[in-house]
Amino acid sequence: MSQDDSQGSQEEEGTDIVDVSGSDEGESLEPISDTQPESEDRVDEAPHEMPGPAVQSSVPRVAVPASPDAVVETLRRLREDVGQISELSSEEGSIVAAFSLAFLKLMEPLTKALPVDAGVLPLELGAVEKANVLPKGDLVVLHRDGRMESVDLTDVENRDLLVTVVSDAMPRFNALVAQRRSKIENRINFLSSVTKELQSIADSLVEVG
Image (cartoon, rainbow, N blue to C red; front, side):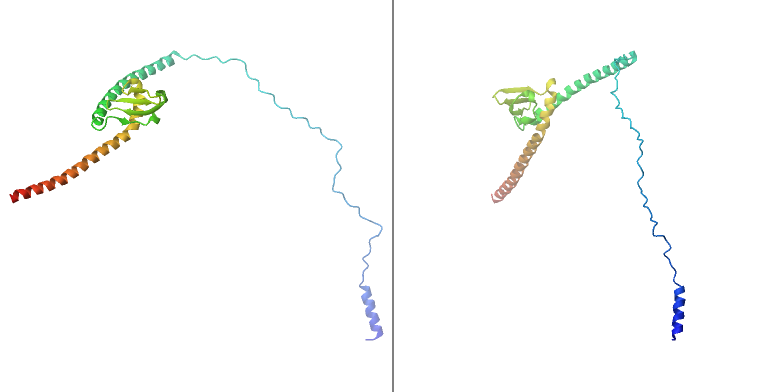
């Protein structure tokens, strides 16, 4: 390549260069602050007022009397309840009498006394050491100080005690009956076996004679 050609190419390349430094060096951009100036005027908040205690009315309440019809209706129901109590008490007396008779017939052949747990007895009886119910329906109590006391369970005032004693004594009474039945069955089995052998021996003696 000749020297003239190289100079021409340099001139063409020089024409493509653009001067981009057009901004003035003396000018500078100031930063924009994001914070807003505080307002000089402030609104004073009023304090909250607490509600005072509720004022109760000092006027007393006046009881409204019941109407005559309501009183009469209440008395009618009362009369019905009293009548039912009388009927139930009479029925209870008959049941207790029948129970005592049946209990006497069942218990008398089995035992003379049936033990009762002293822990189930009411505190009104005092410090009880032992207690037994008799076939005729009496509860015999032995106190810790050695005193003996007999309580009639068929008495009207002792009906609750009767229920307590019977509830505690019935499982023992049932066990006593089962024990008695077992003894009878054992005796029957024993005597039945022995009787068969004796009859066999007796028949043999008759044949020999």
